Image (tube, rainbow, N blue to C red):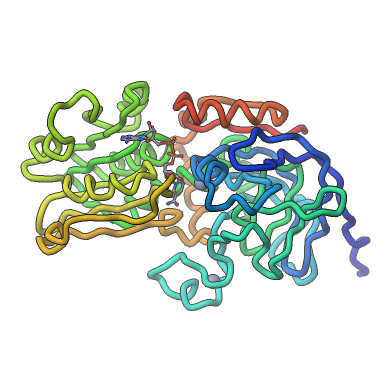
Length: 380
Ligand SMILES: NC(=O)c1ccc[n+]([C@@H]2O[C@H](COP(=O)([O-])OP(=O)(O)OC[C@H]3O[C@@H](n4cnc5c(N)ncnc54)[C@H](O)[C@@H]3O)[C@@H](O)[C@H]2O)c1
Ligand SMILES: [Zn+2]
Ligand SMILES: [Zn+2]
């Protein structure tokens, strides 16, 4: 059979950032057809993750504008590029901000999800040819994480999308495309915590509360949540946090309080803020001998971490984790099944549903600490 006619350029609306921290502007953009091994997706829903906000305010990336952010998204395959056999038009997918080529050293190792071919893209272009698939009047518009879901249509590599059960509600599961999955995996795969353990979580946003949910499901005995925004404490309780601490309410350093509550330090600490100074605090909050700190946050400013070497000499471990260590193609569908079977909760993370035209509201709410996840709904 002859294949149907080749995909054409689509003109649609995208929320374009024209400069660091500048409100997004809905613009008409041209979206190129998918290149070989790529797919073009009609975005259905996309949520705002703190990492979008951090990149949007980062002076380090000031040269990558105009730019389309967004990397937590669900959608429907609109067209497929040459060589794609895995997806068909109409398939439901989640985008992957770090992909899986299935053949590199990392993809074939059970130890890693850091694909060497389709890993985190930081230059605002597509992995395959270092160019963009978006333009405005012929001038390129940069990508974010090779996803850029703040657009009605987006082109991604077929290794940067995962097919999902078509019964799963796309307006909910978009949040499994990054933050929620990152928190669950940090606990279950990276730390692999044991029942009865004590856990401390720095930052009670969507990522931190996903850590709490995962720790509770594993049977952690004590889950201490630390946040400077007391508005987070009520929801934190619902996700399994047993004690909430506000460092601003305490005259002694927060690590001292945690040590007291945990007989010398927690078994596990998770940094879910994006503040590198907190990594040292997290290590200090862990116990000697086996205390493990997992850092998930993406630094807002200073990327370097400092910690006294004695913290490590006395047996603590520091580990990082991107996307919860999940191998996204094979493992994200398992999380969706868990959600459909009501084994994990995700609806409660969605504090706001916002039409695409009001996307800047999501940025405001997150900047002001007034939301967990804002789901942005694309026009039908
Ligand atoms: N590793 C990954 O794969 C991955 C995935 C998604 C997000 N992230 C990163 O994880 C972090 C959390 O993401 P999120 O979407 O949950 O963000 P969020 O902004 O919703 O949550 C962060 C929380 O930290 C709290 N906080 C800020 N400063 C604090 C301080 N000094 N002390 C205590 N609490 C403080 C805030 O009040 C907020 O509740 C971000 O850095 C984000 O970029 C990493
Ligand atoms: Zn790979
Ligand atoms: Zn994210």
